[in-house]
Length: 598
Picture 1 (cartoon, one colour):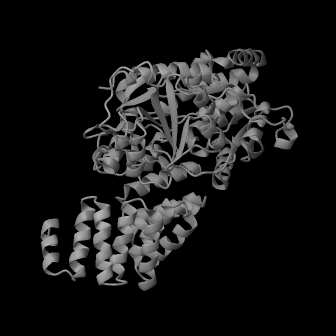
Picture 2 (picture 1 turned 90 degrees about the vertical axis):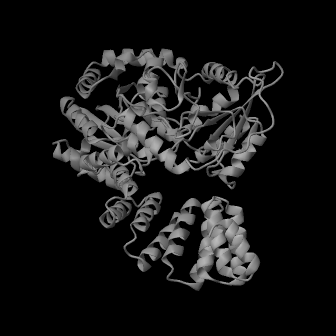
């Protein structure tokens, strides 16, 4: 029955819980969570402790993004019906949303105990184990999910990405080819766009297609918040400030802080009023406090639903909403798709397009530069060109430099380094590094130690390439000031492909370490080249791996040439690490799009 028929039936039989239960389902199907909640509560009042009603109450609270309340209903359901696999599964999902991965693992395992052939439960258990850093078990879960349901494409996506994190390349090329074929043939396939960025050989058009399919699946049903009655004149009155809001999950101790903190303070307050809407965890760090101090309004919206957050942004009269997270961890792109501001801009957090919806692009604009985006057709958004895409603080925290011995480095060796996360290290790139070590005998490769599986695999691959494991040195994760200090002992930073160093490249350049990159065709493969172009160091930009290896060998063997490049880098750093200069180009772009608002 439809809603009106159910309401008529309830008038005739007001004490029938089944009618209220059906009514709740109809409201939920129409995305009216508040009406659904009231209907289910009335059903529960008439049928106390009914497990299915409790389950649906939890599902409704989940749909409303009230995950604490959802978890409470799922727990009540389990208390009454301990073997309810759906309640355990949904409780696990609620715990994931609440950042409680350990609790999520417990309930996904219980769900599988009662329903052992649930591919989605295995996939989500894998996600929870991934969040706990148990990557080997996560990979096993994704494999189990695919064994049960080979067409569970998001499980294949997760499997590939975590294999990349652990540098397990066995069968990886075939799995990536399979996923690309799925993307080509199945418009309904769920493939997380971020994972695709690091997969070798994927094209810009595939990345656009993937982002668009994901956006349509996730946000295609959403309706924009009702328009405010306030009008926009089109040209900024002289006494009116443009309200710019930055939206992010990463206003904390995160690489983002070392890119934008000083930029936020540098905005011209005679023309702009700056907001920050934070929906990520509050780590109480000095970085978060500094970001909050550098904006005019800092609003924590973590506990708010997407519609509530969108309503707040609209009520604040934001003119330009700039999302700094994109399709990365904790993403809440749906806030932007609700169109709470007349202008939306995709920038910095996600190196790619956010895709198209049937009713138009997810974002109005994307901030890029000519190096990153030579072809605007690769983007769903309209390109806004800056002199350089990536901003940087003018200062970074630094400790005293430790000795080489303290870092496990040989005193007299040439030190190649690459402090990128291991998911960026491809089989092809590592093979070129091994070739390079053979061609430069007195050299070592210094890598970031991300996880024990990657370390073991990389050492095994080195051995297979006939390179001594003693020439591969791993740097443990340390606080940023200690990490920067140890760069002093690096001679040349070797970039990765197809996902470059981004903030990591800025770290190296700040510490006067030349970055050698191989530029590809996609956004994430061109960021390091963008930074180097800004520094006029085009000799460090190569276009194929053969040239990349030859250039690295030349720099390792010609100290005079390398030192000349370092001298150029030192003399030109202010061209890159200049937030006050950067913000002028950024504000010019903001004023340009503001004046185009109808």
